[in-house]
Image 1 (cartoon, rainbow, N blue to C red):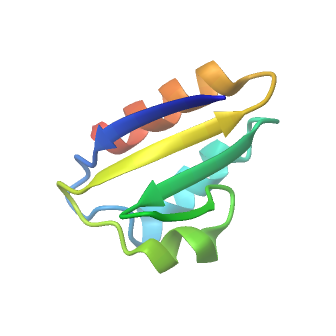
Image 2 (cartoon, rainbow, N blue to C red):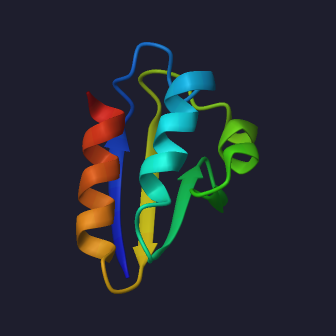
Length: 83
């Protein structure tokens, strides 16, 4: 299991279009992926789960991955949200 704590750098946070792009990126990986904010953990491959977190810019989140490609998944998703 890999995990990485990151600060969201996207101007609009993970809302609407960035959330959809994040989910599309997450679905490229075979690993189980989760995103956590303030103790609430959701499936990172679910747009509804992601939107329920209401992640805003400058908030800290934790990305979790478990599977064959977990390291590359965590690194690429972390890069996406910090840009």
